[in-house]
Image (cartoon, rainbow, N blue to C red; front, top):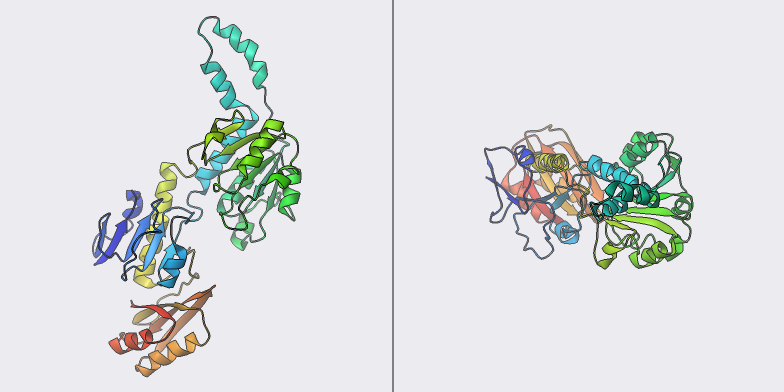
Amino acid sequence: MVKIQTLNNISPVGLDKLPREGYEVASEVTNPDAILVRSAKMHDMEIGDNLKAVGRAGAGVNNIPLDKMSDKGVVVFNAPGANANAVKELVISSMLLSSRNICQAWNYVNGLPLDNLKTAIEDGKKNYAGSELPGKTLGIVGLGAIGVQIANAAHALGMKVIGFDPSITIKSAWKLSAEVEQALSVDELFSQSDFVSFHVPLVEGTKNLLNEERIALLPEGATILNFARDGIVDEDALITALEAGKVKYYVTDFPIDDKKDHERVIALPHLGASTAEAEDNCAIMVANQIKDYLENGNILNSVNFPEAKMPRAGKERLAITHKNIPNMVGQISTAVADAGANIVDMLNKSRDEVAYTLIDLESEISDTVIDNLKQIEGVLTVRGL
């Protein structure tokens, strides 16, 4: 019986992708084979020896202790792109909210007395005149699945779009409109953008990516959009720029303190991926990935192990997580041969300090093969499939 523990409410549409026979899926499971999680914090969790995989039904994995998982040979999956459309729609709508002063105008109308309402509306509307998006420049920092969709949508609305992403993948590049221009640096992007939208993870290199020095590069009256992570924007410096009129609006999905009350801040309650469709899509993607890994050993969309996918060729398969050190492949193949097994096909991939090996055997896997492999220094986990 394969045991799957859910730490949050995972969409039943996704859970339906897991077989009913041979799988136990519940929130209370002892020593699970895999964990499905959304936002629950796992850093202080006790990790059982039976855990093989963690599936994050979303993109960010800040709530998962990746180093600890890698050390134990636990593969962590996420669902990149599954919520991209939801975030894209929110970013586009946020540009409209800010460019047309919609939130402030709404608050104005809600505060008007009912007597002589029409006259008050006509008198006050001049204070909320806005501007249109066509012809404005949107700068996007990070051209992954979300950034690409936003770039293409903004271009379709008549905006000029420039992007910066030194690590853009071939897959993203293929999907990106040819009209999107490349910025050679973040500083160049800031200096040209009427709107700036961030779509990068929070790591050491992106903390306070927008700071006092870079705010000075922005055109007068620029709007900042943060639907990536809290910490990417130096909010103290940004509030100073808002009060000085250098920046027109700050739209963020991560309100953290009384800055949310500033008249030029539009703070939303982390709505980025909060649609029924996005939750379904994330759950479906991660459930399929977990199932394929547990049953076939294939890895797709892992954040701590390399991608590894190999068609079945033999009678049974070995899946081995191990450290990325010299002579591991030689030791593994020797251990298999010493047990009298014949290798039909083999795949080895590495990523940073860890690696992964798939081996298809001509015959059934013997206990001797498993024992031989577990004796190799640097091997983390061995599974027969």
